[in-house]
Image 1 (tube, rainbow, N blue to C red):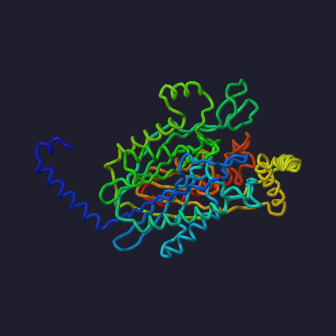
Image 2: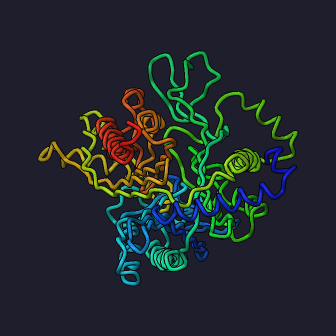
Image 3: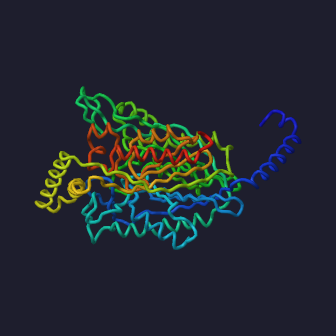
Length: 500
């Protein structure tokens, strides 16, 4: 508040009235933003098979609920519809294509007037969430007991029902509101690919060895946040975009939403129990919350704070979000431009070399042999067998189709001065940097894992090899990654012609 307003209350009142009149006049000719929010409980029944590791894990306990969090946006010019976006963040490993299609189909039945292709779902990549894809031809398959454990197709049906209901609820309860945006920083994720003297790279490789040379890629510590307010100025939702997959408790045999659960709980304590928090994961295919050097120093500081590593990640992220909030709280916009483009890209499939084929074939046969000798070994070996089998099949297929492609859906969404862009992969951090660096938007939110989430490694990663960069880990290679970047940047910059 300025000094003269404190000394002259009448001047403050007159200024406020004039500002309100100007604001209302301006809005007669401006886009109006409508916002609706909802949350769905997607916690499975027990026992349930958990996704994300090579070995079968059956969860018999629930440590935290799993949720799907929805923000529905509509832009209007008076009574004229302009555009929409429906964003759903899910406490899952990935989003299977058939599940996304089923959600859209169900929503279309209840809301035939909207373009359901402008609904996108993302996963936070918690490795303590249910298996959702496990068909006979799945490239990563588990031997899940039929009679005693919840089956993936049963969970999928439950998930589709809960999420589609919440989307409909969010859409129907939308009302005029405003939005704010900002950024801060938090050291949540670390580069997880180590490079050695011979040029090889290893995910989670040792660093305390003479052969260690460097970490392969950059680290991204940006935290981008969108805040959504209702017409009364109450904060009703936020989207947090952090380039750190939710993998701190990834090895447990229990259902757990990882760090996003305590983050939501802390934020609800401050901003209200009905706050909806969308967790978005930025480009982080080669990052994770596991430090590979200076571990002792980090562990000491966490211990002195009387925290666990999960607590520490929560503390850092919540602090960053609160810093953004305190900075942009009054910088709200109700007349923002909303433009949403959904597009299906055609990306080349990664070519399988003969050497990759031979290695995969050998690994497939080795795992199959162990299962044949002892059927109980399937709990440890089936995922590894099918993981390698997929490469063998791809190699055999490319003999007759050397130019095989996949369709990959992307969304680019302008909200005022910022842009949200999606991809279905575990996208290596360098690709996110390329998009952000070339974007004409003031602030760029990159969201990965809006699909099932195979890795998309860089050229240097493929040369180094190792899990996340080998053929088994990725369907699309670096050439497809650059196509994804180039097309995303083009779509973004077409939305911001005024900043060229």
